[in-house]
Each structure stands twice: as C-alpha cells, then as structure tokens.
Image (cartoon, rainbow, N blue to C red; front, side):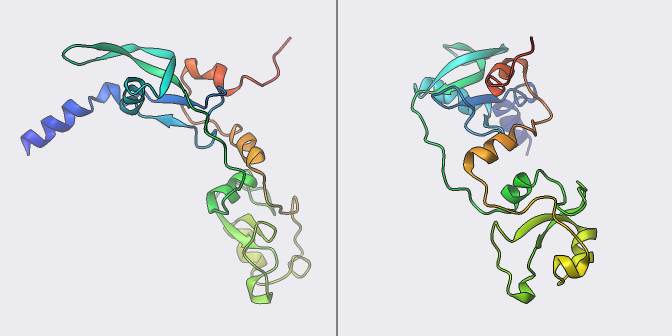
Length: 194
C-alpha cells in the first residue's frame, strides 16, 4: 500500500492538480462555456508535445522531466478547428441550462426537477416543447393537471434551443474559479466599458 500511495503522489502532486488549461477552438473561442472546456495540466502538456495545440498563456509553475522543464499551460488553442455541434441533445442538464436553472412556474432555483406541461397521463410527450424545469413544490402542485386546472402559468413557452443559444446561456454560469489568464478568451466579444 505504501508504494501505491507513493506512486499516486508522484503522478499527481497536490499543487499541480489545481492547474487546468482552458481549451480554445482554432477560432480562439472555448469549446464549451458550460461546462467550461478545461483539460488537466497533464493532458495539456501531452497535447503540446504531440503538436496538437499551441500555448497561448502559462502559469508561473513548471513541470520537469529528466531532460525538460516546461511552464504549465493555462490557455491552449487547438491547431485544428472542431466544428461545433448543431444538434442539441435533449438531456436534463441541457433542459436546466435552457431554463437557466430556475423553475419555469415560480422562478425558484432550488430542488429542481422537470415537469411535462401537458402531462404524460394526458398524452403529453417528452420533448423540448413539452418539458420544463420545475421546483419540486410546483411540480407536485401541478401534478397531472393542465396549466389552467392548476391555475399556473409558464414564465416562457418551452422551445427547442439552438446550440449557439445554449453556448450563450452557459456564459452566464461561470465556474467558481476563473484564472486571470482565461478572462480575455471567455468574454472577448462582450461589450467594453467606455
């Protein structure tokens, strides 16, 4: 067991776990905003040596091999452009992102689930146009009733989101930690203050 711990420690020293690299597409936009496209520093260094990415910014810390020392990349850009997907998968995460992580009946942000606007018991289908994010309280209140029967209204009619729409919504929910070297690439198209 002692050797196992030592190997794990050597592979991932605690200080280096905290050095993710922001991955940009060849057009210098993040591959995704939510979740933010980040690679562990090990994958970033490997991609540099395989000549798949260029380093745009670096951390002050370095990693060493017996013959090489390299500053850890903080922002990398892919050499080959990855075409963004046009089709948006119908997943719980994407549904919550479309609805900005809030109940479409009352606006609550806690205890979210999803609700069929036209209940399945009444022939409603599971689709972008019939499913919304709902807090547990509103979902229970509505149950298998129609909106009119429950006396409830939607904040916005549910629609299938476009890929660009979801990317833009994802920008509203940055991760807890944003390294200063990432900021210019995350919000480069935001309006500048005069």
